[in-house]
Length: 190
Image (cartoon, rainbow, N blue to C red):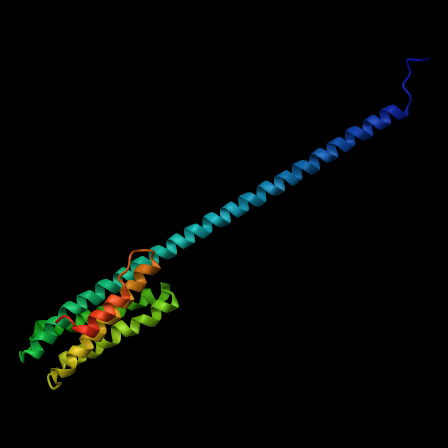
């Protein structure tokens, strides 16, 4: 009777096998959970980077639109201001160009206001309000050209500060603002 196995041996072996299966399932489930969490974290990071990239692209496009609109306005304002300071008539073409450029600049501010951080939104009026006042002075034939230069200078400083902050926000090189202020304190360019 030495060939017979006691009944407890197969029961123990079965229990050990069952415990092994359960333990393996638990380890696999734990490993799968960790893999799923890592995948979710990677996906969240990818989505965050994508959102950041889209946001940066939107800000860059909005800033470029504002800069282009302001510079286009400056071209016609400069021409109008110089004509008025020299006592000349503006002419219908310059008048309509100033009105159109002023409207385009106002419209360009919308996307920048949506995408720009608060610090840049606070700088936009400092760049725009002198230009708006200057355009009114230039377009009003009854106004004296004496205040035009100060509005022009204020607008130029405001724009250069705004442009520098926009470039910094995008991670680009930016003009030294101390130089800007020093230039306009000393002798502004005509």
